[in-house]
Length: 435
Image (cartoon, rainbow, N blue to C red; front, side, top):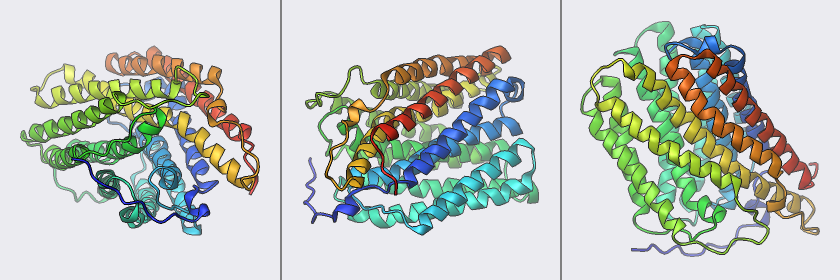
């Protein structure tokens, strides 16, 4: 059954364009956070080794989750709002304030995690919540009028609602370190918060974005089928039950974990449908498309993480679990989510730079093709270093090998630096105009 989307009245030209600088601020901050995470790992691997729940590892994890993944998604939302979701997202003064609160709050959280100072971490988390709340409200208000698949709108709405729930849960966990008022076991509460953020927020947004962006990037036919609802409904039902079950330490949590896996399977089925319905690619698109290679590797890591997470949940207590939990985290956060951001940005940033350069020139001079903007050499090095670094990081944490952790940190740090250099070159080569 195929839904029908009535064509909307055309938006004014300025509303069809993404804001010029705000997405770049989010992306720049994201690169700094991810570089800091891998630099900490490279320079002090002993600080990240051992049992996974300690202040420095928590600081590094939040540099990846909030600093890289969430900041990149927020920046991308300002891009794909007008470009792919067909809803205006002009940057206002309050949006700049929201970015400032988010960036300052993330820095404060990471620093206070690092020095194990709980009170400072709590107020920093409050600033992050306020910044996220503003962006979420903007998206949730603009989303209903967007002329796109209703199932895609559901993914985005649920994703941002889950983000606010995860942010509130994180804030309460921070306050609990000072006031000690939350019931239950602290690691169980942390696990519930982490899964609500990673699955309910980041994975839900990845799914919704993929239904709009992957057809543009592959290229392929745009899916508009009733089956698109399945990934949102299954994932949301699963993550709410899983988070509750993890917090309460109940065995029935595995049933909801199976629903999460079913939601992932429904999403992958739509990806396969797109692959089976290709469209002619632009002549300028260079093959192999290294951004899509990142996306493919990320999806492999998603499947591996889902399988390992399910095994961890259904297996009785055993010594191997202590080694497997960090591997699960690396596959899900670095191998899948962080790499998915890397791959999509490889195509999204050139298109954004092309559009804003064209608009900045008054639509008089056509900039170079967005497919010609990225440096292939930098992309190859980034892909190779990331491909090396992820399994090395997982093995180093699982086997407690600090030399491997340091090597993984250096490899991934180099990948982030090279990707950042490539991003700056893309913006400059598009002749990005001054405001």
